[in-house]
Image (cartoon, rainbow over all chains, first blue to last red; front, top):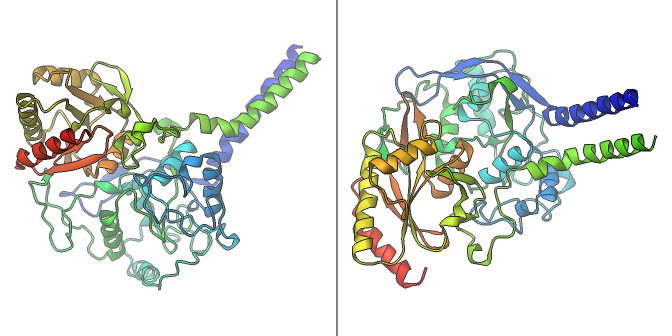
Length: 266
Length: 205
């Protein structure tokens, strides 16, 4: 009897291991690093603690499964507080997407939807620092942010004409140094603290903050002026509100490594 | 042998439950069946997050429904801006009480949950003589705080040295939790806020 009980116990452990590892499947470990934020006072550097990141952006197919499990996130049921009227507009129904788009990254999702999707997986959205840190990586180089060729290639992606009817499937652009696909070349991606970039309304010109509107606005001059793509992403984030949906804005999830919970980089 | 079958069936059910388990464990930030008087699509109280007040009691934001609330996101170590926000709120409180503008509550939410524990918030309220019958001070996880800040369109950025850059805003929520007025900036005139409060009180909101 004890023997059989042990077998069952082992079986249960294996099953739970499989369940858990399936969620972490297709995540890469991003090793510890240092990142210089584009906008920060003086010589601030962010220490990136090691973390897990989804290898690919979340797909339409995966998001279909999510709304099947969580009806309050379906297009016809979502509250305006949590997504604007463009939410999942490219889907053919509440719970179905055109077969052509199944493996494409899900877009037309708000920050609330992205955040909730990740949390239901036991994950979270990556922080801006984490995302920008991995975005520095080229195919073979950990930090290619000063490589003119790399930057030009990204600018080429950003200048492509709009194709809202079809976004290529995940994995169709390049694999970077960390093993992550499509960090550049496919979609913009939500981050946990996109709203932490402070600026006044139309701020493309001014580098100073209206001190009455914002407490403690330090001098925030861009660090690497050659990294125009990073500047564009920064401007994009500043223009977003959490309930916005955009045809080419999606997300991927991240996760603390077990020993690192609580040490998350901002 | 029968026991073994029972255990195996239980194991199968449990492993199936592994997929669904994450659903029941999910933070479930939306309440699927909101009470009728909170059905307002834009109500902040649609957030289902759980907070701890300065008395150490856990609560949902929807408990604030039933009367207008003046709300600000601050942190206790804030050197200059938040004290001025607080003064603004106490001025609104004084006027509201003086003119018997009916019920109105005041809410402070911390943007610094690591330092501003419920105990710290309690001391903060005590030191500043905030009447806890009218004032609610809330502590939540960073994730829930970010979500609330996004709903209210408050930008927060943690800077080195335990300081936060943040929007300076005082919000007026009606009794259903819909934000009806934003008082922006540190030198804002409370007259407009009081007028907005007047309007929703007389409209029965």
